[in-house]
Length: 157
Image 1 (spheres, one colour):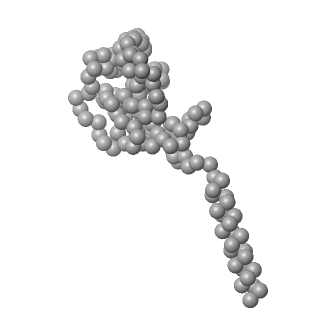
Image 2 (cartoon, rainbow, N blue to C red):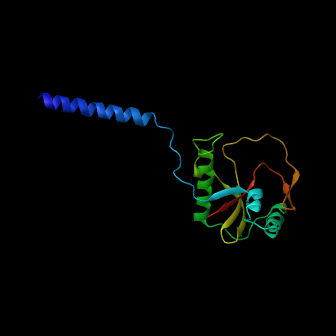
Image 3 (spheres, helix red, strand yellow):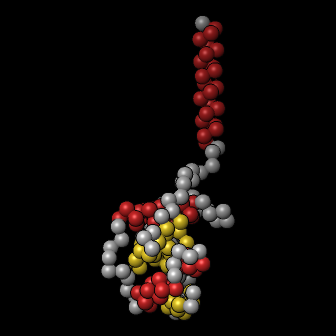
């Protein structure tokens, strides 16, 4: 009988320890990145996009147009997962509640060099001031007409 009581006390202590340990664990982060998501500037500086690519993207963007082809759904999901992963794992301002399903791809500008997908994503976790945006930004010698706070992003497999 004494051994059974000791065994039950030991089991209860182990369960209590496990509950305390898991309740103090940090918030769950996505386990891994599913590609690389960068700005147009970074993609150009890293050699992912050429000046001709930037010009093609700018021509679409400045005309308030997008690629005629549809973005594949599985690629769209990977882009959204990477966007959420980046926010969850941001070193300065992590957003623990970031989820892929909260993102929307507003525009698709095409795929370049077989692995660089160019999109405009919404920013579901940020609030922007209620002001009109109307400026020009130059990237790699190519001018982009900026009319919103949403940025063009490049996702690479």
